[in-house]
Length: 495
Length: 95
Image (tube, rainbow over all chains, first blue to last red; front, side):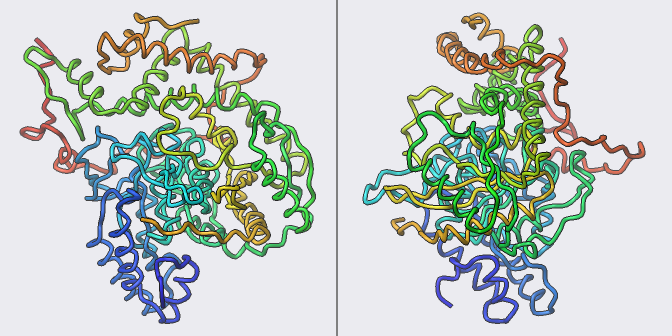
């Protein structure tokens, strides 16, 4: 078989089960691709020995029969996941040298299912960013380019390394995490599929915390079927995460029939933004037509508090981050600053955190500190939490009207150039998440599906938002959209 | 409301992040940009609306109060920048 690294999870699984392919061969092919893809800066810690060992064990298991779907599948793991004995830095200097003594629940589940870890993937520092430009490892680079222009583009963020690696076929799939759009926006920028499940579906244990009430992990894959397969392996109740929900995990793949006849798809009028590029508007209209042609009923809906989602997010997420990141004190793990004569413990904290955190992380920690400080807690933090209640209610109201899923653009633009936003104020960067952040605030599942290319040849994605806990139904709608859109473009290899 | 240099210094202190004096005005400007954006929230009528505590309506699970883990001093200290005699070592805290 040629180009093994380009296989989907489903195709590789089937070939391995038939005996046409071994995980060792597949893993070797991916490791080779990674070695020649240094320019993408997607993999930042390489684990070829672990991969070879896991692949060998997977092959034994597959031969014995009855191996799980993910057995032998080579994956990239976002640096936010704690992986035992392997650097897990959340792309931050403050966790330099940190090698966890434990394994995150999600990676444990994946490895127990026989998946293979190729290495750790680049990301924005502590998952704070939309372009992978806040990483201590430097920028990850999008394998896609604008026509013949060789300007380097962002793969999006924060799961930028995951998106670049999957789009460039360096691995079959990758883990991502999504606090305000960090799976869906990079998936859209790189022409791949990414799903953020319902809050509580995937355990957060062992995933470096950013904003605990919003963070969810999910798969980033080459197509919807793979997303269904990998999501199932990642989900499940975990006693170590008190917000993890005790609900049975369905066989998501078995729910992919492509039949969406009679499904009610909502089109939210508030998502039609001023100054939205015509191409995004057209893609959205085409996606709507595709679902209609597939037998869905299209309804106009209103989510009146949409406009306030980003401002609420930029209170709640920094507030939670300032609390979560208080643990980085130079005492228990990671970087500690050299202190001067006469410096006490407070100076050690302050210097350690100034050296260890990058600019964007520092800014968010301080914003969070401010909105939680005495005198402002009610005006900012409590008000934002009230607005969050209203945002969630907007969705509950449309679901109560019988809407099964909501179709929106995934991002307000295609991938932009690395460095293009350097001089823009932080709000311009935050606007990347305008269509995705509502979903985190409401705790809902959301999936980004590649649906077309812009006139420069860059991929564009559409987002489907589902009812809580109905990832299976959501993925089936995504599957129908994928079938209709027929997106097959791949980036031309230049790296 | 607008954040001045002194407020920025106070916030940096609360967050335990050292910010050089000459960087404070720029930091205050950045705070003001973000807070200006957040200010939109004051347009929303939140009268009688409960602040969200949990996005999923659920009761936090409870368990029996008993020891389930422990005896892992080596592992706990393995990543410490400075560990001595089985403890984390820090600069002098008490005079």
